[in-house]
Length: 133
Image 1 (cartoon, rainbow, N blue to C red):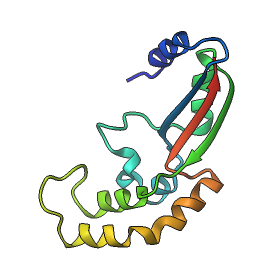
Image 2 (tube, rainbow, N blue to C red; image 1 turned 90 degrees about the horizontal axis):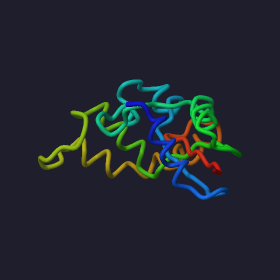
Image 3 (spheres, helix red, strand yellow; image 1 turned 90 degrees about the vertical axis):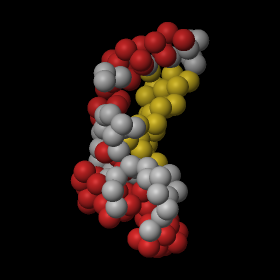
């Protein structure tokens, strides 16, 4: 799916000077670097495209957005979902949580410092694009 037509429509909806915030999966996230296809950023069908800061900036500038700023962000619990993808069947599961799932959930707060520090180095799970029309 090409995001350019959607961004073009969003650009047309904004008043001059209007702001757009966009959150997309970071192709350079720590989880992608360490666990590759098991990263929650590869969670199809929710994530169809991965971006790097430069590619997101070029895309936004290509549809005439200005003052583009890109940063990374890691939602609390994102490491849990990556580890769950790696150790259990991917995606949402409708059965009762098993021992591994319950243990990962209980240990998820241990990963919180990692989720805080990774964005400092541009390796947060998501890219946040902030721009003006």
